[in-house]
Image 1: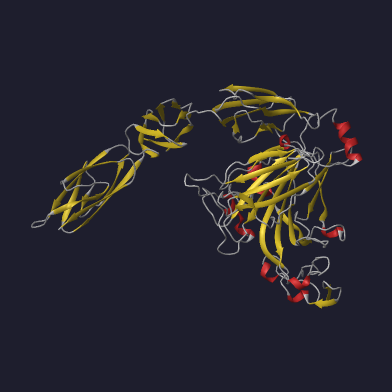
Image 2: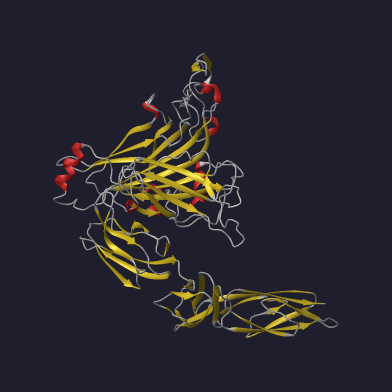
Length: 619
């Protein structure tokens, strides 16, 4: 989230509004993006650099990708232009190999396939990242991280930056008889300009906006290109219809030789009383025309228009405009190219989903990065949005010694910020604590955190989590778990936990899944974060027992229901135990059971804790 740059008029209006509804209100936007790995090699992380803000300006981050929560650092060596780095990076395995990666796409990824970028179980060659912030950044740049192929196997920037840009929102609050106004500007992606030239790498952007606005809150994790709630609208649309506002616009960083290519201006919205949320999607594509369509002296891309009669939904047919376009070579000589014969819009490289909230509700960030004993912790806004100041309590557990949570005075600006975690840890260990914040409007938010502080010789701790499924009643208890109420516990590495499941009245416990199996007590040794699930079903639930057989013989059941040859399947109550008896035909032998039964005895028992299949073999 960020505080938008304001005009003098807007600042005057805000000063007036501060006497009423807009006191201490957080203004800003959240940005999420899909990005395709076009490096040609596996990548092992991603870094976002935001210039002109501090670490305390970073609010939410999107943490559901192959790398998890990012590490945030600040470079304040130049007080006039501080830099914050949001770095997603792979951990290393014990053998030194990388634990996570982003694959090289096997085929080009289209914009309609962006939903797979949000699913960590899929690795098709793209990722989804996101960050919110306060302030007015001067520059935002993006880079994939790759192995440097040295003996240290460190992560470095891939030489070419990522061709995705972040929109700038300018917000003018409502005035008497005038609605609020939100204006979105998308700049050219931040890329280097080659020496002695005036233009950097070109790209095309396609802008899609929602047609209306509403006051629904949009969380950072909802600004994705998937339709996870099944309403037929992509999540970034905030349950609204969408339309294309700009088909394709060529953007290219430059030194001022062509300001029209530096950014796409003028996407304004009437935001009513200021409670509406404005959303945008920006799709980015490579410049696909031949190299000889770029000016040899300046680097400017001259095939900079897209034929509007071609298919806008199929980049393979997005040709340029003009068959006699003048281009200058490196020696100053002019020649002419046929842009209309070339596909000028190239491969899809990513999409930015952005939402602007004039009044962000009170919230707490999702995750905290780890710290190190006796090393300054990167100050981080833990409580965001709402109406400051806040009343903050640690309701369970405790912060690491040396850390504080509350008002923080920034050493560079001297400004006092609210809801910041800061300080220098004085002891190592694993700290589990719950934070509750209440703002000036009495809105309340709460979240639980686990913070690791390296530096002392301490026993690592891991989380044991229990989940319950099945729709029945029951509890799981033992080793600090009482689920019911307490369904997770922090345990020392190597702890052996014993969990017992007790079904409630009218319910049946049908078994464990995850780190345990069966229906007896769950005994698990915790050497990593561990999940266990227990299934309780109503006693009225029935499961199907199905018997198959080969050779000559029959199988019967007690209680009755199975008589196979003739009747080979039957439904039984959950939790009942069925005894199957095999009877071989004359001059045949019973060879044994498979499936839910085993062995060669003529009888077997089947606990009906789910649908079961049994096979009997005669010969």
